[in-house]
Image 1 (cartoon, one colour):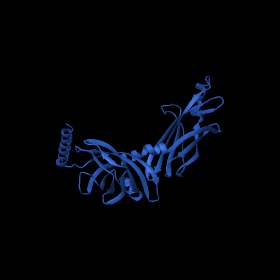
Image 2 (cartoon, rainbow, N blue to C red):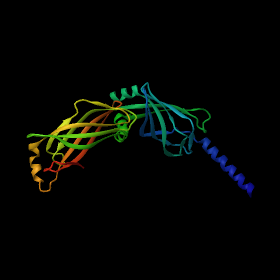
Image 3 (cartoon, helix red, strand yellow):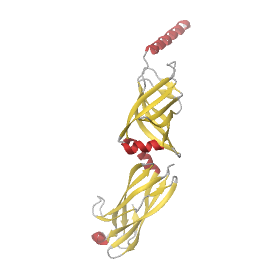
Image 4 (tube, rainbow, N blue to C red):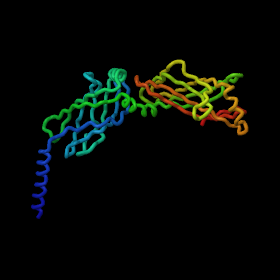
Amino acid sequence: METFKAISICKLLILTLIFIGCSPFENPKFINLDSIELVDDQTENLVLISKVSVYNPNVYSISSKDVSFNLYVDDLLLGIGKIENELILSKNDTTQVLSSLIIKKSQLKSFINMKDSIYLNIIGSTDIPYISKKYYFDFDYKLNTDDFISLFTEQIINDINVQISKVKIKKIDFSNIDLEVTFVLDNKSKMECVIKEMGLNIFKTKEHKDLLGTSKIKESFTVKADTLNEFNLVVKVNTLKMGTAFFSNSLTNKNSLFIEVNSKVNYNNIEIPYSINKRVDYNPLTLEIQLK
């Protein structure tokens, strides 16, 4: 009986190997670039970790411990990459693969500034158990630059955190109230960035109607990597426009203003919009101010 079982198992293994051997090998398909994370900023290169979705159309799983590739834009070498850890692609399924990339800064700047979309040419090699010789792959992937930038946007917003820390009255005269708005900018990233533009508007209503005052930075400034920074903007609020607001809520000793901040952060020549909306409560009698 045991001998019969052993023979049956051997037959099953042989049939499986024959079936796999007769099945033509189909190239895995690059489905999507899911995310990009900056892990190091070097003088000439950016070191990134990316997650990509790859589909294996074969009836068997594919595994490999050594996958490397080059990234090209047209004939220009954009960077080099490799798959982290062991590559395992499930049969007839899509797998998310982790890869490390070293991207040349000079090439990154050139294609982002020139084109709305590009074709990445990915050329590489690996060893696959089912193929006796080294397996080489070559495929194209269309990448919209807006999509590429959006992959960075979430990380930049998380790493470069701008907040309003306080608002105070700096000066009062017959026509204007000067409000000083203090910002704290925490750059937790490994790259410096440039605040190219920043404009501040103050409105009477939360719907951002009835503009009371506006201000903007006079010139751009650089924020070093891994630093905490503080800077101020002074905005003149028209006293006459605020007049009805002062008196309308005087019985409750409370009124509100609404601050809108729009800025542009330049991150290695990638320009990212950044916005803040805050409510400011104040006592129209004492002019005491609180952020909400």
